[in-house]
Length: 216
Image (tube, rainbow, N blue to C red; front, side, top):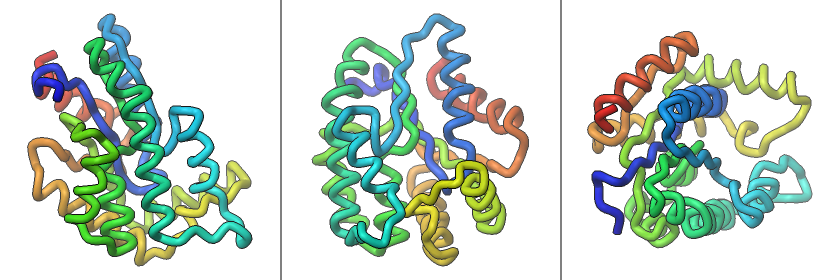
């Protein structure tokens, strides 16, 4: 197990359309400007196997009906692969890891959203992650109406469907509530960030927390 002081691992979570990718790029650029090594990953994805699974999990098609149990294990399979193929080697070199979703997504989406037992999901996550957990997790929080509006805008711009984005408003409300529960349970690790503000304001908050937690 990697020593806590060497674990430079940050995950970004939140609803669809909350701006995770934008904020990861901002933080990556800032760390690189300091001469720090950075590995950015996304879940599912970031390995050949993970990218194949990502296409399956995101595909919106009547012919591809994915059972909740199958969805859970496909996400876990992608996570297990990226941990062993990318994350562990990078951490061994003392690199920063910036992850667009990680284990907390399973607790929020498959736990809060699908209704799987949190205790079961934590046990499965522990196997998939080889016991690894982010040192810091940012949850970019949006109200449900704003999140749904951003999802609709992104769909109009891309012209493509996304299986998860087509879930009900009730599903996304349960996911948001689950993220809030995580922040209350682990306030030192999981930080709620108001993502309704400007990109610059959100980035400033994130950098202030990162600087404090990691002593930059």
